Image (cartoon, rainbow over all chains, first blue to last red; front, top):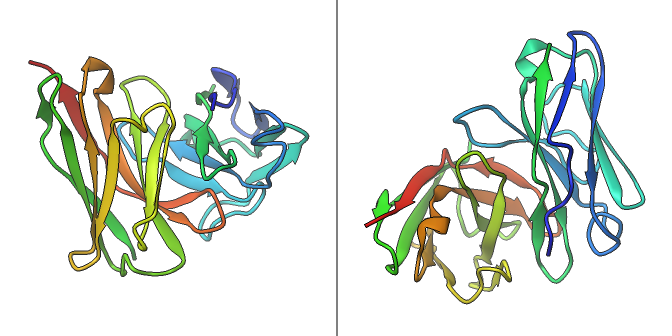
Length: 110
Length: 120
């Protein structure tokens, strides 16, 4: 299983919206609605932000949303805030009981 | 509130076996709705799924590590463990334990992570 492909970095100004893509294959992202997204601040454990493609856990701001089209999943953050600056990772079920992560995207809030 | 805590040696010599334990509190590890995973992250790099165990004892491993990995569970202690054999410097990473939901592929609770360095 190869890692899912994410852009290395994205940036945006406070109040703007940004989207992070996560490209897989027809064997993982394209075949299952089981993509999750994690936020990781430096030195901290990852935090679940989106699961099953578009669902938000309790306590996660509705500024975070997820979607999928074909083999690519996306995380959109609207109304960017300084506290959103972090690394973001996507994750997908890859069949045969395997899980694969993306390489991560560094979000900079300008 | 479920909490997970990793423990184990922070330094392992090359060719030896890395051993870590994750202690689960605030809930039973025997809950039928979840599985228990290990995930690692080399410094400055991304997350890598190592494998998972169900409370039945059934396991799944990352194919790239399968020959060296063993994950086990001790329900009496509410713990699960990782053993990674024949380690090299490439296995130096922060190791996380995490809870996953059965029939899904997301991890809702994570330990704080523990740094394991492979060095002589």
